[in-house]
Length: 205
Image (cartoon, rainbow, N blue to C red; front, side, top):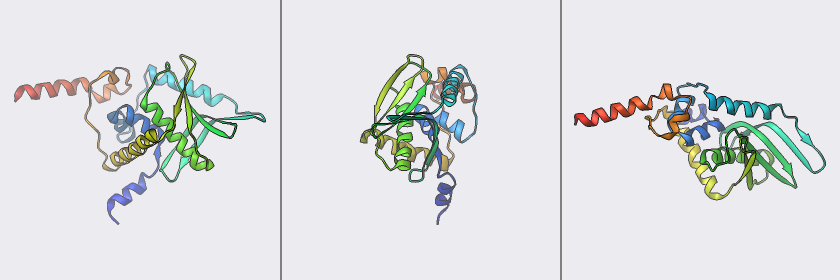
């Protein structure tokens, strides 16, 4: 067997959070999961506070509904693992709920993260999951995410891209845009410097 197979075996399990990081910014993903660089800022701390509060919530049970918090997830088929903030079991439905610290908004990175949780739950409980929710702490609102074929295809592609980057250990070049403003890794990524160097090199031609 070739070396690529053995490399795949070593990284066959990918944290679900890596998929969210990749969709938000491939370079951020690489800095965290390849170069193992991580730094907190006000936005990551706010997120940690929300997740800590969920972790401390007690599980809830009655005859009609069961709510599990901080439920460990895994999928051997897809090579994923992680933790679901909340999973609701109600009316023969399994509903993953991901908590975010900001206001209600459409965001593909969050949808991919929720979809990854759903496919883990599908494998664990042998049951199809058709939707889930993103709960936004600041606006106290939920957004329903339909787990359709389009989103599942994007998830499959993301898993492949992430696994390929982990095997090759390539860190993408910085892209200086609005995402950088709130990124806790800005001082390590140096997108401003990269932009200035690129402009300088163009001027030399």
